[in-house]
Image (tube, rainbow, N blue to C red):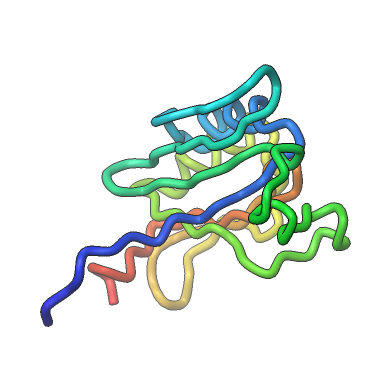
Length: 140
């Protein structure tokens, strides 16, 4: 199969984006790629994870047409219409790191019927994340 080069990058908004960036790097292992901020307002940030993984984020108060179309989890009862799924080499080690940093576990770390191990958690502002060792590109 001939694949077109493309990338899907989740985008998130945080009330305290600077604190979120620090937490996401500490708890989940993201690395800062670019952060464009004025004072406490992050207009755009890019965090990388491993080879080819990235999320983009910004401050809720940055406004703009994109931000106006988004709701924060606490504004809609903690529900999500989408979430981030991140492939990790060692789900147990990642789970230990994330929970040590205060991630709220929603689905316990366990072997999955389809392969690999994984768990779901929330970050400090309530965004839902899935971390697991199952890689659909190689394990399917």
